[in-house]
Image 1 (cartoon, rainbow, N blue to C red):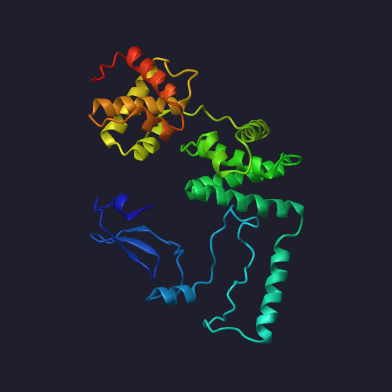
Image 2: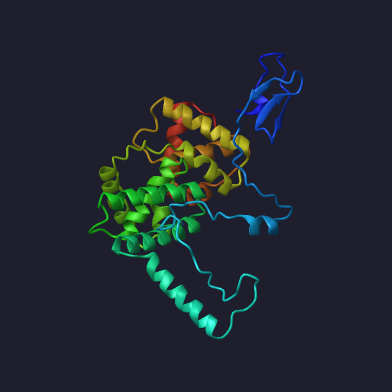
Length: 304
């Protein structure tokens, strides 16, 4: 429990102090012990600068799904330097290089680990090019690992399944990317990614909701350099359109682009249909058609 949310049951005070020697949380006013036997999960040592903290720590990096062995194995640094930073020379350099070679071989024991190592490096490359956050990469890695465990990868392209996992993870985390965007950084076609995604969704029972056009507004709005007011107005337009069933059966990117175009006109931040279409990766005809539908069915008066 947090001290700032506690209330002393005796005097009603909210001021406490933590007695480290006894492991007790004590009321400052009346001395009542609120909690006892508190376990301190911090280190037993103290450090006064970053160098001391790095030298005294006895734990490594946290586990991650982005490494085939989850980061549990050791790694020999590629720089030929000792613990003091001095250059390793002569026979010791040869020995270290031999150890490094065997260490790389021992980390990958079988074909499944070799598959994971290649797939996760490819996933990391694609996510880095798309500037996706760490949580999306971890979610995509988890999906790919599940696909490997269920033997869905066998007979299929590794790149295709990695792209499908990344596409699904983006939708799961609420920052969707289109198949075209995934295909631009992938080594397989959009058609192959779509086929792999449908196969993975069936195999893993992924019940992902359809992508909402609202999810694209912030990203497209930032690319168009429109104000927060225009982005909010575009979201309000889309929410009203969704409520009236106007968006059914239409591409979310085209709807988001049209809503941003309308919002920019209403707020005096005029953007051309070409600019909006290029950002959303749709045609100007699509923007124009979605624009007309939203304006007509929502009775929006757009200044000429």
